[in-house]
Length: 130
Image (cartoon, rainbow, N blue to C red):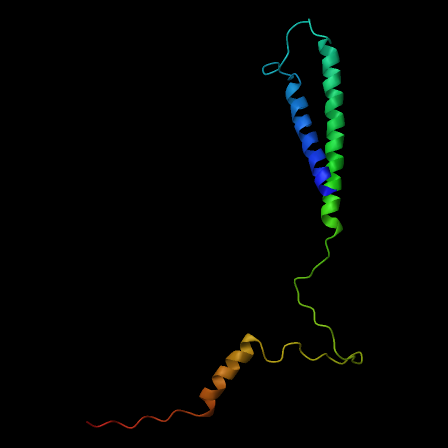
């Protein structure tokens, strides 16, 4: 269904571009078909036809745009960037919950790296004689 709406949307876009380019510019410098009579419609009738066609194509463009945006978000589920851990036990209100991380933080790893150095001080090596 989304592919069909995209094809209709692209056809509306091409039609809208064509009708806008066919319209006579207000300044008259780049207008197409600015000459006298001889056509099947007068210049006033052509302007009304192109204005109505542009309005109809614009409404179709907005409707298909809204449908495509709605279809894009229809199956999307909300996600969180924060990890959520399900509580394993129920605690009474007012009792603090245990920390989620059990010693896996950066400061804990630095403390563990410092402990072997603090526990056993290194003895100086005896001088070597040759």
